[in-house]
Length: 545
Image 1 (cartoon, rainbow, N blue to C red):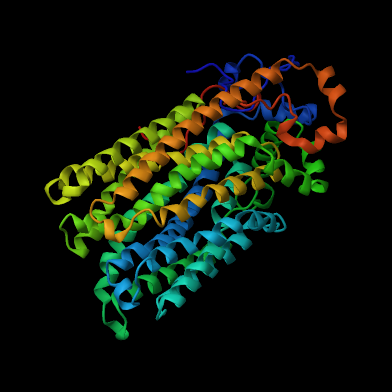
Image 2: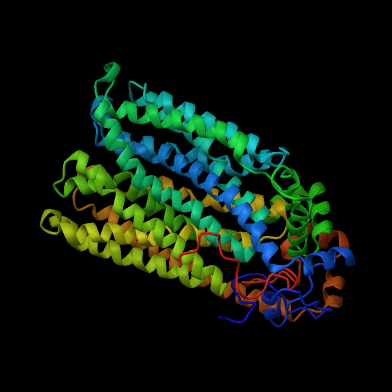
């Protein structure tokens, strides 16, 4: 176990205040340099949190896990199926029936990402005006489900482009909203496992989409419609149903959960979030009147650009392979139906990889090595494909192994990057805007991924495989740059005294700056306050062994 705090996240070397020891055994392992972040809590509130009890804490976290994570996983599964099922529809005849020529298919793929990128931050700003995020998210899901259903009725390239555009409009806000909701319920050392669990739904979606497409395509000719049309129609209707489900079943905040949480459980969940924020009440009050100043600080935050590049380095090769995987497997000599089924194992292994990686990243409070390790696997996979795919029919086993290996590498990266970003943003407003900005910028990679696999280059795909290899290398460089940047900034902050900070900034300026000024919010991992949690993270209620 690494000593805490680590340089991955913002933590403290501030002069020690009176660090109270928690009643729980886990709280005895607080690192040197931690502070009592609960200065906004009264003595009664501090006593309540300190004496809440480990068994009660596990019980309430388990209740949140059961209510939140499976619902988010289901919703993200449908989100990913609906944006990626066009790859399944293609090998069932979409391109031929719509008379797509040249790069028209790639254009249709890429146009999804334009509104998806541009609307992520505005969507999260709109989310802030809803007392119940579930209402906004549920409506968003039902809307994209309706668009997906109508995609099954398009008759030409123009109709397909319009459908993909509006799908991007309505899907834009879901993922950053989900990350934001997780940050409101869980502490930093609890987040990546939960993010990985619901993000793994994207891997499950890849597997399930192939299986579902295999079954639905058998409806070819029903009501005079081709099988690929039924893929869009049925999966779209399921998304509409999921939007209705989200309206009623997606939990919002502890304060709005009185139907299934006891008053003391609500109080505990709210107080531990207040404690983890440090200057919680003051930061939130400042945020109310400084949203545009916070938006400016997001645009000027160096770490978000590097995190976006890490995200970008994954989305480009990931989406490229996702849109093309059924065709790559078909090029190995399999029928369309068997190619759909053979997309299942790579995605299944990706889901397992994301969860296992998250367990260890949370346990060791260190995101970087697990992201870099995953990127390394991606590099190895695409080196194999670049070398062997030219003669794919004589190298079926090794090429299929490389496809599986690429998915094992892809799926731990975004949960790790999202958790890493959330850990380093103070205050709910900057966290919501910062995550949306990072994801929006990172999804530019999706546009690039839509073009790197060129049909005329099949089965070798030199552009796709070499570009994917380069993106993975870029991700590794950015992770190492982030780690160095965090270490350097921590070192500088540790050398500043309270008097030096006060001499440099006014109270008003400090309150509006969030994590950029909080000396106790250093870049590293983990900065959990001593009266909330200690060295061993809370496991999810469905641990592996």
